[in-house]
Length: 297
Image 1 (cartoon, rainbow, N blue to C red):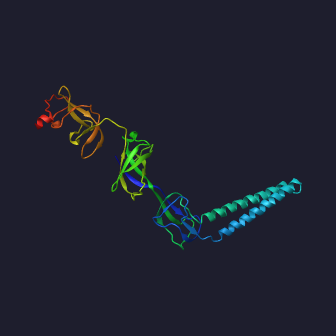
Image 2 (cartoon, rainbow, N blue to C red):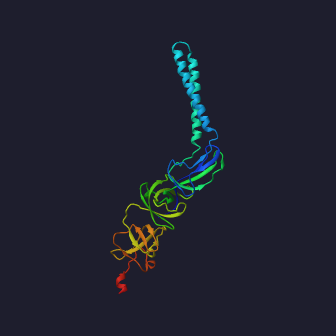
Image 3 (tube, rainbow, N blue to C red):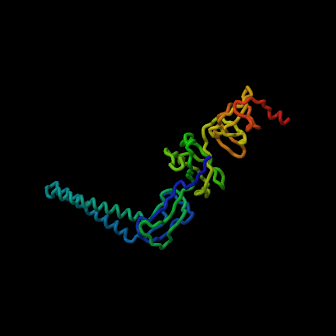
């Protein structure tokens, strides 16, 4: 059981890549958009004419190059003249590509399917390069982050199923996608990330959640936490009576603990657990046990 934080699977702030005036708003707060969908339109400000100019320039240079090659074949043009035209043509094509790219930036598109979480512009807004436009988040899948204690990290691996329960919502299914290879030097714990399916797009991103990682099956015993005591080394364990009626203290490993009881490993399949008076007997001491059912009778 881990404590974790839920985050959108993807989140990005979209910024203007060219300067201009917002002419049309295509997406508003809370809208669901598809990958590649246009979000707004910026003013052209003569950029289209730039594309046409460089298209014409490139077309002319292509014709000049073809003519120069024909002349060269008849020894009427030098190789350097051909190289000069080729250089000018390459530069014109580069300028054309840049002009076309600027025009494409006039209509910013959603990089992935998601929901508009914030909007920083309105129609008529003047934006500069780098001005924030939208925040887009994907919430049909979430990312849960937590920290695994050093003693438990060997039991956690990518692919394990996780039950994710938000503090104020129903449980969701998840899968471990990442376990850090090195511990946080301050906490000595390992970061873990979990992909959480959220098909109903519940508004839980940013909140806390309990993460129950499904570990491999182990043989465990369910007992009351009141029966646990500490050994000389400070490790938890329980006292029980063996076949010779001698007190045995056995160290156990806590798998999980709740108000209902504790699941522990390290005990034999069957034991006579000391439920009363364990604090008055020591390991190795001979006792006369009384069965709890007989005591109740």
